[in-house]
Length: 298
Image 1 (cartoon, rainbow, N blue to C red):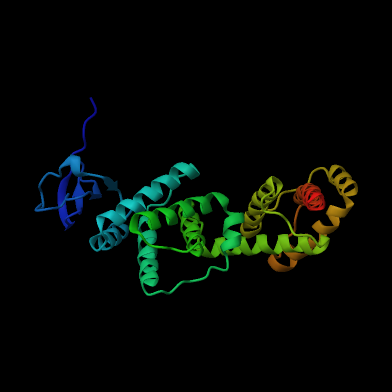
Image 2: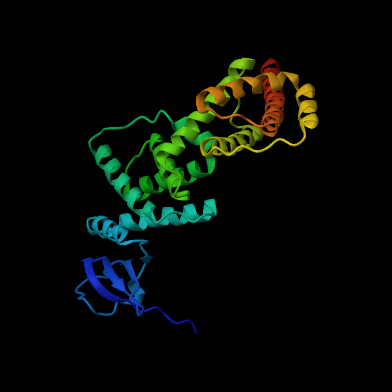
């Protein structure tokens, strides 16, 4: 039979939130309806009232959680917790505990703006949706749950802002600045391809998603200054000759990366880009032809 952890009240934050310690003096913040009602320091927490246990990584984080939870309705904490747990399962990743803080703070501000009739447009919405589709899906789930449970109307632009929060929480090195730099890099490379061939790439294509994923890895190498050594020039040259049209575009991307980031691409990186561009061009052309054929049939 599993032992049920026993928690002692260290501090009552409000009727629904307490700061508690276990038998090993490990500190946690516990939430649950009525969990702190008429409780005093040293008293046993009713385990049946515990809905969520937060284990802060540091004292500063613990203090911040206490401050936020103190003035946040338990229903709101429940929604945010549900959405974060959904995100963990959907993304199959652990999310930084700071997400509880940043998400509650952000949503509180958003709800205040909505009440005042002020709506922020998100110019990055399209890019967030197509560059980070999984995180965008979690953000959309969060927006819909907030709207459904609280009876408000957060606009679709908010999904883009929420996507940033989930991206930040996936990795400690995923700062907002880094995400913006990666997004800018993706925008620039895709624009070079579209201008080179006078086409519009279709984000719905499977090849588009794979290409964007590859570009993310490439951007990480560029920002971290990681360059791989070349070892088979003859093979790379054969790829360049086979896909001359795509390689011409790669040379423009190479020049952009060298000028903008002072990074020299390896032959291997240029080969991969050549192959990816060739594939996405073929799929884009087939997709465009199908659209034209369907229009002619109509």
